Length: 266
Image (cartoon, rainbow, N blue to C red; front, side):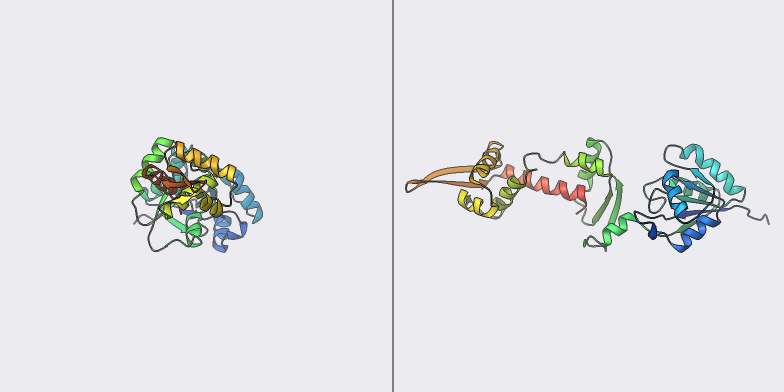
């Protein structure tokens, strides 16, 4: 019987913002392996320095995985033990760690997870959202067209959906929201009109706390977009202005709210 001299590939979880998230076992493994393959060597050096770890370091990321992956497999076949770490959290979750794990399994090399911090599950458990059934979607497509196609394909899913997104991409996505409704006062007016058949100007002013001038401007904008219907009539010697939401306005409001839910994973 031929002895298996392969090394072991460890997938080691790293902190997601607090260096104290690192586990005792994770620190021990990073100390004991022959090589650490890091998604971002600069970030990993800070972690290693904090825990006084002096293991050799090499880069392994999305842009070099097809070249570097086979090289790391060769080292594992030579008997070296290698740890893979991502920028933060669990390797293999929306990062190239998955590719290396697949290569290792194909070659009969042992793959061992070293569990720890995970951003998706951490966000889920403190969100107050139902945790009994959920789906991890990962990063949304970068282009607006593909992003909208994906969101459209999953919008009827009933379970909790978890997305990853960078802050600057999130900002870009929020720009796609209906600009007319992306105003606190106009949104407040629409919310009120959704709950009543009709509301007059005095009632809207009282509920929103807006000035008469500002409220008038926002009502005019909503009316021009045909999101609300405005009716003016005389009651005695005074003019009464009343507002009513239209089907177009109701649809626009619902689309706005649904888009926010999809983007922000509410």
